[in-house]
Amino acid sequence: MSRRIALVVNPTSGRGLGARVAPQVRARLESAGLTVDEYATTCAEDVGRIAAAVIASGADAVALVGGDGTIHLGAQVLAMSGMPFGVIPAGTGNDFARGIGVPLKDPLGAADLIVKGDTRAVDLAMANDRYITTVVAGGFDSLVNKRANEMSWPKGNSRYTVATLAELRTFNPLSYVVTVDGEAIETDAMLVAVGTGPTYGGGLQICAGAEIDDGLLDITIIKPVSRLTLLQLFPKLSKGTHVGHPAVHALRGSTVRLESAGVTAYADGEILGPLPVDIGIAPGALTVFA
Ligand SMILES: Nc1ncnc2c1ncn2[C@@H]1O[C@H](COP(=O)(O)OP(=O)(O)OP(=O)(O)O)[C@@H](O)[C@H]1O
Image (cartoon, rainbow, N blue to C red):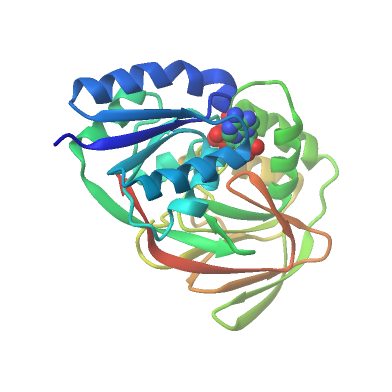
């Protein structure tokens, strides 16, 4: 009997890329002998609603066509379900796909991973009763994220660069209490990021070296630096060469409490809520094709 897979498409992801790649992906899956039930989402709520219906339907697997926002919505329902989950990257950031090693600019290559059928279990962070698939941003990076989300131009990843430059003009370091596994660190910092995977913002390796299945959270604290130094650090984040910089402190743990007055945390590129936020880990919560 052929495998039955639900293809859940956010047609708006990547400014219409989701809608464009879906027919090719469907054709690829069908030509490999899979039976495909396709669903297009019409709003954010549809992603979870459809994923829940798919699980209840007894389908063999689900694939989401979309970006990190879509994956975040789907993960709320797919986590702990045991249902194998494929990602067809179609967003602007695609950091979850990057973290699990799915090809980013090759939707048919991503579909082939689903056809092949190899799965692995990956960790998710948890905060505010939500599963998080990439990184929690709390500081300068939250402001960049907010600004980038509000921008209509430029279209791709360079939005984050433009937003960074704009926020840098007025940003001052923040006072934090970061409590890792019960040990409180009081520090001033530009940002504190906590993730299961290594990247956010479309490939910035803010938690460089994070392993998606080690059962631990990776925490990065960027200590106060001049605006010029922060500007110089950002291109290094893309390459991961910031590791070892004296302003960059990396830790690992299972629980993290982030406190800083007046800061709103972002997770998977969406608003998580005002700090303080308690972050935990759900080891192996999501089964992915990779
Ligand atoms: N039809 C729709 N279905 C699902 N989500 C939608 C829809 N229309 C708008 N959205 C919004 O799109 C967001 C998800 O977009 P997604 O993250 O997949 O793409 P992106 O923003 O282009 O990429 P990235 O997050 O990787 O930068 C959701 O948070 C949701 O609010």
